[in-house]
Image 1 (tube, rainbow, N blue to C red):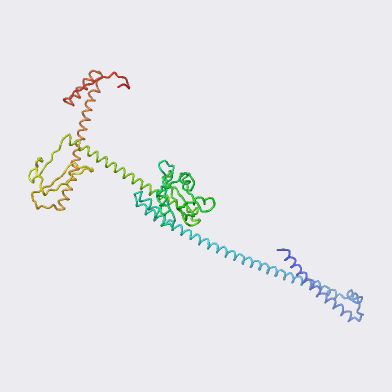
Image 2 (image 1 turned 180 degrees about the vertical axis):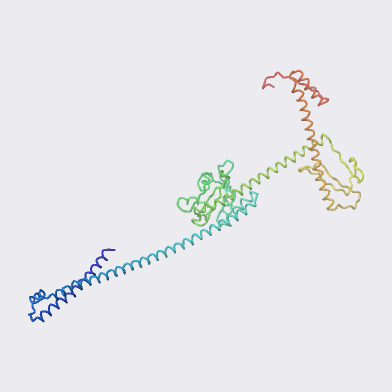
Length: 450
């Protein structure tokens, strides 16, 4: 309680005591005056003092100022207590009002904060849904030349960005080359083969060197990054690394026409998008490499098959056969080619190894679709059977060769005499390769001499 309240309470109690005591003095004065008057004494101070000394009843009356003053002081104290209680209640009321006002302010602030948080959550949810849509769209594409433009266009349309570009590092990892863009300015940059030095000025150079995302705003030191005449409307930019594991192979560059369009929390969301883009690009690259490898393997298989069948045909020419409905005979060189004939090539790994011909002497004969399909199916199976037969024949040859080499090795491996070893080697090769002159000559040349 402050000094002012204490002073006010003290003055009120004193005032009541003074008033009570003053009122109490009227009783001794009146009693003394009446006693002097009734005693026939002159009304003087001496008479009054004489009466006071001689009348015990007046002694009792003389205590009236004290008694009434005490009662008045007690009443004043009660009044002070009531005033104090009123002051406390008023202070509590004021405190409650202040707390109510603070609570209303806090509640309003919480409502504003919740509304802002809900708005941020809605925006975050919308971005995540857009990223999921982008991931579904780009995951179905496997051709890299079609995938990259589709990524930039889909991101721009789904998230509402002004410019989206994809930079890929060259083989030497010295430059980040713009490989796709959706904006008009970005397409102009593509035409002139726009590239940025890894680790050079700008956030793309920073990201491709460090592998860390970076935000640039059109304020302060970042203003220098927005002096691109091809993208004059850019006021905010974010670049995120494209990586496989820990290896950075490019950057996703996103630019907005809005000021302060990106915040630190956007890094986490857009990093998820960059991961999806990285996976899609790597899948397309892997698919392209697989297709190239398959094409090379197919070409090599075709070439090998062609060479093997040429060698096979050269070693033992295979004659053709005809079936006249009753008997199967070898094809004669003078066999006539009927006008109504059907030829189906025997194709193995892209190489034509023969022909299946169906001929008829009936000039009005027309081959139906079922007959043609049957002939094609038969040709396919015949081709596979011929290849299996050739492979089986070659495997038998290799097995016989390995067996012969094993037998010769077993015979000469048990010999320790040089002359017997040479003779046995020549004899075994002569038996294996008849009509062949075989000689073994021991050279005295030193290593490195010819």
